[in-house]
Length: 68
Image 1 (cartoon, rainbow, N blue to C red):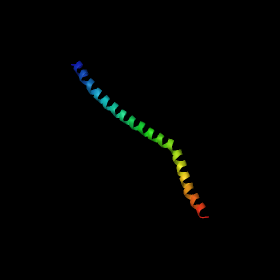
Image 2: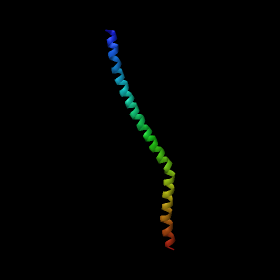
Image 3: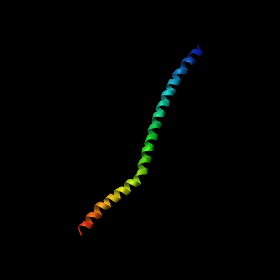
Image 4: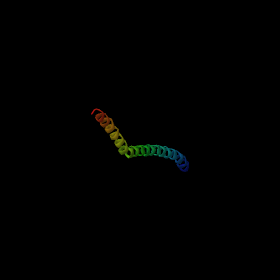
């Protein structure tokens, strides 16, 4: 009788463990995706800043030269 209780508890515990592992896997994927997104933003930030600065300078300097 005691052996039957142990055999019955095995699959139930496995289901709980599998559910926890699926939850952990899902959260790990979210964290990895978020880290990749942050890295991409930081990597392109300097290029975007330089392009914005260049555009702003062109929009300010060209009209200033034209008004002379």
